[in-house]
Image (cartoon, rainbow, N blue to C red):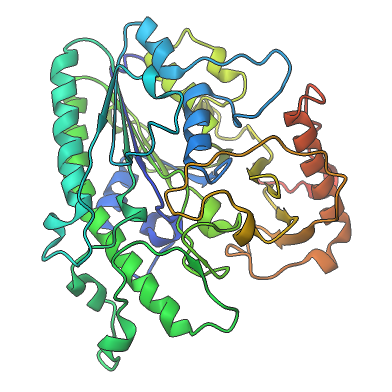
Length: 448
């Protein structure tokens, strides 16, 4: 793996609740995100990254064990924690977060040699400038901590993990950033949201579109602040990369719904606005820059990728995950033909190149474990699905990006095939079976 050899640093920066649809790299034309676009121009961009579960505990379990779900009962399954294993190989590790509840909900926290919590005072009013926002304060701390950890590491390889939850907690962008989205003829008082804490609720079916638009503007203003903050951090990555080869992974563990399917914040159903993850992989010396990958990837692939970058001899993390560095060597080869997603015990979905199948067994709003946008609650073991029939939906992909045209009534055979695969995945995760069958011919389309 020539492009990964010699990597001395891996920086994994996780921005919670960053919706892919608000980034220019992923098709947003409403406003520009120049710093994120700059990072994309130096990186491999993964267009088909999807979550396993919308809960942080599950995301980090996957990222640090290489196992997609914490409840997996697959035969011969053993877990290693990536930071612990890397420490045994002589790699120094540090984790920085502004999510103070993350440690108490995370049995893997002690695997990191250094765990740093930043308790920033949440703003309840707009900042005067983007430099005064909570996001900006956190990025400044994250940058300084990276430099400090790098100095302490010296010639020792370093894994630096960062988790930023501010985007799903505090919307303190300057009012001018929200007002920038107004047309001259519009009434500012009605169309500028006065919400400065990330909201969590469900719109009624007959909601006022202007109310949703105001929230979208408020969120867009936060994304613009994030974009401004990212520039200096990427500059720092470039400078460090010139000294020692540095791999930079920038991603989100889940999006932020803004009424696309009535939900705002969490809880929310497994739809595009929540499940599609922005994912950028900047290789040392920006190798393979301007590359886009259509491979299906999920959080458990990052464990295999980080292990390969810092300790290429370790193969344990490849048992369930895919080494993304290897995927780049063979872009014409389909590494995964589907992704399975689950939320709690009542909601599951399956994504293939041509279809997205979604099923729920009761009202998601009433059943998700924790209604807060910073939910850390984990999934539980898939039940024996002999109860009432689920509510099912089927969408054509990639045409129906935002899942608005349910084709279940017109594609019965495809829906049945997708449901069978969901049941098969659930049985597999319960330990009933050692492998998954290939995608049926009726569901396959040629994309590679």
